[in-house]
Image (tube, rainbow, N blue to C red; front, top):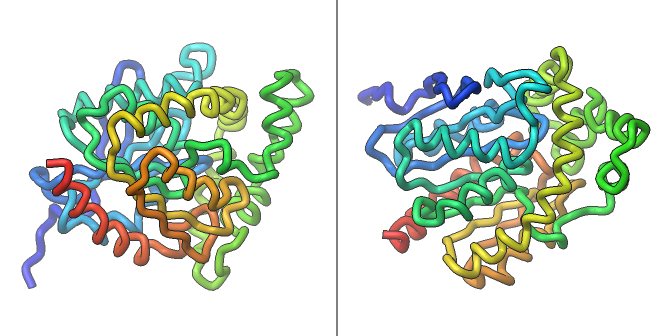
Length: 295
């Protein structure tokens, strides 16, 4: 069997203003593009199992957001860690790479970043895959009390109360472990995320983003208006046991996108950690139809 190096994952950087964006890439340069946007507290390594499964049909590009993974961004005080700024960097990243048409895979924090990108560039987005990526109030679980208190009153005490969200135990047991089959859950993902969180200033950057997360529900009406106006093909594939974003958030896409496909998997928030093969198969059935319709 012939071996094509294009199907291997490559590791690159792209300068976008003051930010050096690290990204993973696989697939042929002339293939349809799928832009993969990771979540909290992870990085593009969360796509390490998915990318090889799709690389024969698509060009996959997975950047690390500023403040995450191996992307090099200015420190706090020189760069405001907000979701608007994360979106602006990713928009600049797509422009620097000359990506004129692309599908989006958005997860967790990647959803408000990617949906800002889509709403601002509707002519460029061919399809959206939302994997536990929320865009409706119905998607919030009852586990947001500390964050919501910080949004209402951004005091030092409320900021400190959110620090528990960044602890190794929370990352390992709550974010990764809840609802996931432990025999299928590799320790590699959460161990790396815990290591990233231990870097200097990482917690403060994440607490800044936790505060600014309040801007995302405020943006939901704009995202929903984009859905209604442009009717992008959308696949919602969701770990049904996600402790943060409940399955109602997946079903809610159908309010504005009646033809949205919804798949609920027997796993948790980080569904790719246990169900990469299943998700790749679902994408493999959805995306060719979506791209054919997009023209």
